Image (cartoon, rainbow, N blue to C red):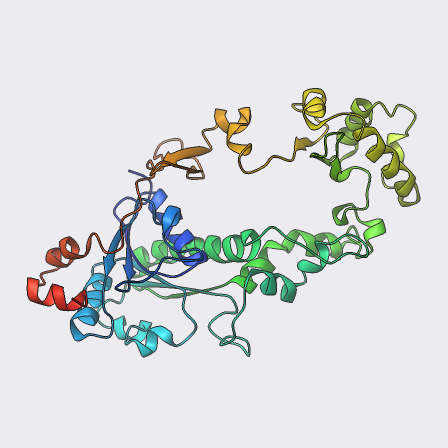
Length: 372
């Protein structure tokens, strides 16, 4: 059933982090009900796998009956998720102030790129923009090259969805004690900033340098980067600590390299060239056989198709088939209250009539609320 069994969350359909946050909560046992618009198209990060295990209602929020129906749903819930620009929910008549008296325990989760306040609050943006403003994009580049990052993972999902889910659970726990809900303002730009805490800490003590030639994280070191193999595929090395670096040198057969000079920056260009040349002598799978499972801090770069078949991924059950498609399994793991097995994604609006009947609406009002 999951550790969040018994919680009801109303999610207003959107893209990116809102649906992912709802999916995380549903995976953990919460009842998540997605409010969708009639004939709405599920595009760019809405619906599909991210609606697994949820229920769906389609409502015309411009009709009196549709507005009444969604208010009833919210009043029956513990929390709400919305990812619109600031002011949209207020214009719909569904802002947090509407529920302050009728549902004082409601936790109102809002996720946006720039936050509910500030000079950029009303402007459009996407993952890459939030990374740029926090300074994090600047450390995702090689010397002389433009920065690049994995699509959507850091800003939208880590900075947005994860912080929204975390904030909701925190507020729900507090509401159990105080009897009062509150607004959770989860801005992706804020979350990315928090995630960069280690970088700022290292920079503060002088261990992090902005010069790529003197910073192993910035891809100019011989021991922390991805390298091309003989077959054109790649492996990654991440031997930051001295014992792991010594193990790496041993497995690369570089016995003449002094491991105690790991952070002698002047050695890096020539040594990096040697490491790159050595790795091009074997294909990716040959290097995996030689290094995987050791303390050399090694992993092959797998494709999205290869990743689910890796022995470690299979042993941990990190992928599951839902609706005939392979999807990542719920995380994290619990020793006692395991996450529930992901259920199928509902068709848009398939639960509308059932849920609204449970809330006491008659068939005529249900039809009007659906926009029929």
